Length: 192
Image (cartoon, rainbow, N blue to C red; front, side):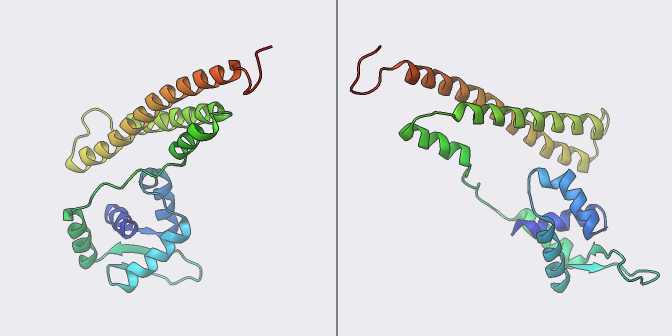
């Protein structure tokens, strides 16, 4: 149920067309709540049908013109209700963690390269977040909305820091286990 609330949030920050909204998702909200462009467009239609948003009137109707949407009072009330709602943390569902568990059964062969690739991806994501912080949150920018947005960004930075630390530990373990496995004599045989 969070995609409609992510869209309401983005539209309350700035009325937008569907295309503008998808671009904004790609640059901000999408870092922590991903969604395809098709899902966003479908949800815009549902929100409009529900009376939570409306298309802004256009001065001159033109075929193919982008529709711009704004949030209606019922949409703001729905978002406020959702913000106040209680929600339990979601369980972690990560294929890399499952692959490590599977490696405990079949061996870690080849897993080191994938862990290094994930390390590179998380380093790049951390650099992106740090760049956003430097650009969008200079010293002295401390309005209430900015402080809350920065808090979300700091959550992303902390998560990337966790992943980097954990991946370095995992890579070290996997490389050590792979080396030990390569040095072990084959089953039923004797070392050469």
